[in-house]
Length: 191
Image 1: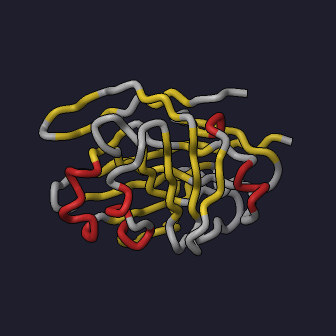
Image 2: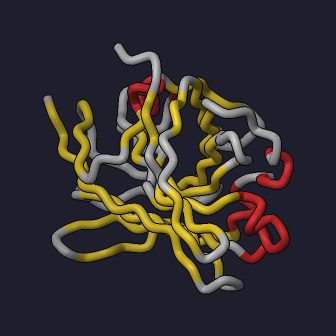
Image 3: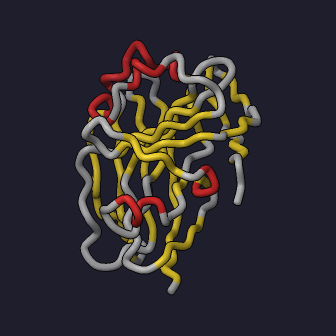
């Protein structure tokens, strides 16, 4: 068991890209209703392929806030699950994009960010989520998130895959700055 997750994001800020090494020791996921579930940090991953036990893969587009010494980072993630209860949520890896923005760079226009998600099957993308990112999380309230922590906020509305999904794609678009953060991964079922 791991007591930390080493996150190495590519942070776009001020026309430059920074790649800090961040040690994450605590993680939580919020699926709405104001409650958060603690997630073991060994579930966090930047891998392009994950495995999951049982059932059919299901990715839920999410926004992740990552505590950093120079202020929180904002990225896109997936609250991947084998079902819709807490044990199924905790059993699966939680993919997180290596692309990130500094929260302070997007705070002035948080209400303009858009979170999208797709289920991938046989080379096709089926829409699963599209909503204003500000609805998914009250992000401005976390501008003092301490380092070594990750908070993930699930999209409020997401479609379940119809049949088998081979993977998932999510993006966080900033139309004001003309930038997009993306995440794409495949999910294999193990038994």
